[in-house]
Amino acid sequence: MVFKKGNCVGNLFQDGGRPWNKGRHTRPKFYEAYQSHKDNAKARGITFLLTFNSWLKIWKNSGRLKQRGRGSNQYVMARIGDQGPYAIDNVKIITNRENTQEFKPTKQQKENHRRGLLGNTNKLGKTESEETRRKKSLAHLGSAPTKGCTGMIWITTGINTQLIDKEAQTPLGYYRGRTL
Image (cartoon, rainbow, N blue to C red; front, side, top):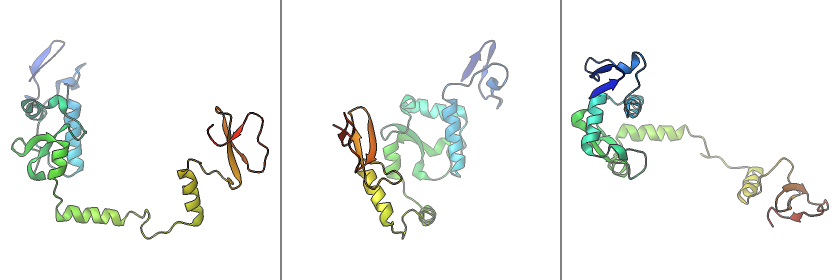
């Protein structure tokens, strides 16, 4: 890949350097996607052996470079069998849907998932108080519970909506309910 910017011409990464770090050069198109892929692999504990040039060449040869993305019908670079490093001979370009269908968690991944769920205290063995259930019920019905809303009603003009005491007289121009 030849890189040209201003009066700098040279092979990108030939000497391992990045010409855009020197002077006013900009990064090549898709470099951020490459770096993001590399960083995500590192965060997941997966070795990433592809250079920018080899990563880009794999994508260009697949003819799917412009169809990369996160949607189920968009394309990703996946490891063969979800094992080993990201390397030239161990990757393929497939849809996200295909990649998800191929995933077979290892015993260690299943155990890590189980442990992650154990740390999740949301609703595990907990019962909600009557007050919490009442608030959720009101929220579900479209009435946002407010402090001391027991005995309150919504009134509207069709433009303005407010909450008033149930026993109060409805002001002129207002109707009961949140909508007309």
